[in-house]
Each structure stands twice: as structure tokens, then as C-alpha cells.
Amino acid sequence: MRTNRWISILAAAVCIVSATPSGATSGQLGPDGAPVDAIWRVQEFDLHLRTADRYHSCSSLHEKITGILTAVGAGSVVVALSCRNDQLTNEAFARVAAAAPVIASAENIEAATSFDSRQALVAKIRAVRLPSANDLERFPAEWRTVSIARVPSLHLGAADCELLQGMNEQIFPRLAIRVVRKRLSCDSQAIFAPSRPVLVVEALMRREA
Image (cartoon, rainbow, N blue to C red):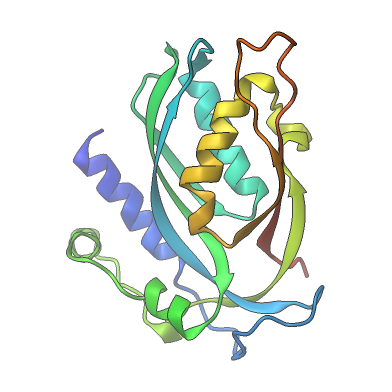
């Protein structure tokens, strides 16, 4: 992966969190079903995917990783894979950047406006002003239940078990996501045909107007 390309990705991601404040001030969870005050938080993730004998095209992996994160409420998802789009592989590394809703708590606001030296350099190179707490967009969000393997647009099946397992273990713990139910039996050598994976989560999502 070229450094300049990822610098461009990070610069674009930094812009996501900057917007006119809505004026909301509460950052606490409300009663079940009630909207909560949220902000966007841009994060980076590393994802390592390895399967025993199932091969995926890199273009398909890119599409599914992006689609899964979008299905759980993330926006402006950027995925950079270690393989070519037309390549079939059973092992891939991905660097992922995405903006995801988080509760507008003091801790999350501080995290969303704290930047390391690399991010500061990216912003300087691209002439992007890093956001302060007053710049963060605040919006109503709610917890929604998502059965990821059954989202029609994702076209996920038994062959995607390791992908769901990897995202559940390596990415979801760092997002505002609660796992409700899962069945990720990824043994392709099982006597019976592999069953469709199950991964049901509650995800914090922006509430539609």
C-alpha cells in the first residue's frame, strides 16, 4: 500500500467529523427505543482474513467488508486490501477506515478530537483543520437490531463465515455494537454441508428524520 494513498484516505476521513453543531448536549443513553445524542468517530482497523480452502476475489472482499460496515451504521468506509481486485485468495490483510456513530459522552468526544503525530501530519499536508469538540456534528441515534448474514444486498453465505468471524473479533469490539446472537461454525470439512452463518447485532445508527 502506498503511503501517499493512505495519507489521502486519512485526510478525507478527518473531514467527516467536522460539521456545524446541532446544539444537542446530552450524551447519555435514554430509555429503550429513545434516541440518544451521538457523534461520528473516525477509526482505523486492521483485518486479517484467512480460510483453509475457500477462495474469495479481492473485489468481492472489498465489497462485502464495505457493505457489512455500512449495514451496521458506519459511513464513508474506505477499504485497502493487500491483493489485486481480480486476484483469488484465501488470505488477505485489509486496512479499513470508517466513521461510525458513538454516544456523545465526554470520553468519546475527547477520543474523536485527539490526534496522534501522523494524523496531525496528514492534516498539515492536506491543509485540513483538525476538529475541536465544538466542530463535531451531533445527531440523534438509536440502537437497531441487524441480522448481518440476512441483509439481502450483502449476498452472504456459508463461504463468508470466516469473514464474519474476523470482523466480529477484530472490528466490531471497537464499535458501538452489541452481539445478540451468533453461530459461526466455519469448518468447511464438516460431514454435513456448512450452514449459513448467523450474526445478529445491535448497532448504534443515525436516526432517520
